[in-house]
Picture 1 (cartoon, one colour):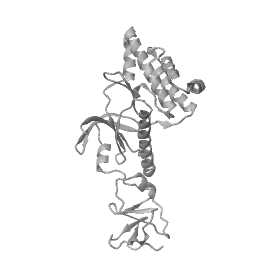
Picture 2: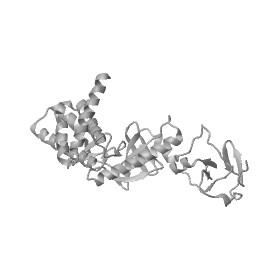
Picture 3: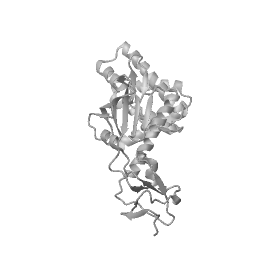
Picture 4: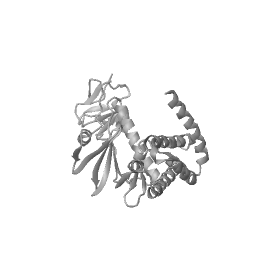
Length: 315
């Protein structure tokens, strides 16, 4: 196989002997890309997904057909990303300090500052069990999907944290810091202390806000995917409901997906807040008043409930 001028073959890769001797006559859209910084080739699928490395030259040889080795490890993160990834509880990126708040199955949540404002940094970390190329693609896809769904929800009139920045290199979102408590903590407090008249009124107000917010999402063709009281905050001072964590959100106008959204919330309320009484009925009442497509959704919800009962019974 004849190699392009200025190249040598080393361990399944083509490397550049000298940039001065590089033949630019073959510069076209790549299947293979020369990266001067790491001096090796990357597959275009990796190139579209990882952007930390600057591409200097791209070449395709009509007679060359090279495949990546199985143990190929693309460099998709810079030093700052590794520092963020290996951080336990405290650290700093450049001049910004980060304080770890919580960690879930998909991401870590840090408290930080953005242009002098208190903010939240949500970083999606890589999964070691996935192929590195697939991992980069999935991480970026879900990062962008979460940012789009959060922005769309805000346009639909649902209160969400303001999205400050999206960093595709660190796989992170920078969001507004919401000062307040979660609906989960409020409902648990209601259940522990017993319901009084004032708390009943506050419970009605929270349930109405939840039903209206979900109705706006569903009428706009958006499903949250993880409707739990942990993903609902009450802003201090105004008691305004704020929906967070759109990591599992997706666009859909199917009544089935809307019904599953409601069923997830219903199961969360029954398991965590059974002492709060018929709070789900209050939420569904507010949903019915606000949604224009509630009839088809409620019919599907009945079917989803039946499937859930059968699954629970069989085990």
